[in-house]
Image 1 (cartoon, one colour):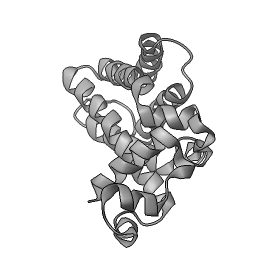
Image 2 (tube, helix red, strand yellow):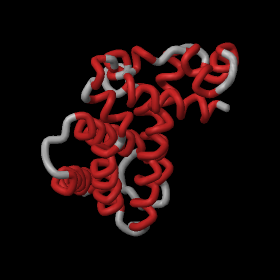
Image 3 (tube, helix red, strand yellow):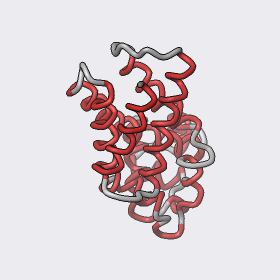
Length: 182
C-alpha cells in the first residue's frame, strides 16, 4: 500500500506539482481512505521524504552495480558510480520536477535535496560505507568517513547543478579520491 501511495504522489508531483498533492487526492488516486494514506506515510512532509528516499534507492542501485563492476579498484568503482548517478539524474522525472521547480510548486521539496538533506545523505553514505568495506583502504576510519562524505556531497551537488558532462565530472571525483587514497 505504501508503494502505491508513493507511486501516486510521484506521478501527481511530476504531472501537476507538489502543491496540488493532498492526502485526499492521493486517497482518491489509490482508491483508499484518506486515513489509510495517513497511516502509510504520516504527514505530507513524511510523504515527501518517502518519495525522495525511494528515488534515492534507485540511484543507489546504480552505485551498487558500478561497485560490482570494479571489485578490485576502489577509484574506478567511485568513478563508475559517480558517472552512473550523473547520467541517470537528468532523466529522473521527480528529480527534474524538484530541481527545476516545474509548475511553480516544488519549493517545498527542494530543501530535501539541499538544506535539509540529512536523511538522503545518511542513506547514501551508508551504502557507500557498505560498498567500500571489502576494499583495502589504508586510511583511518575518520578520514574514510570524510572522503565518503565529500564524494556524496560533490556528486549530489552535480546532480542538482551539473557543471559539465557526467563523464568529466566522474573523472574529477575519481581524481580527488585517488589523491586522498594516496
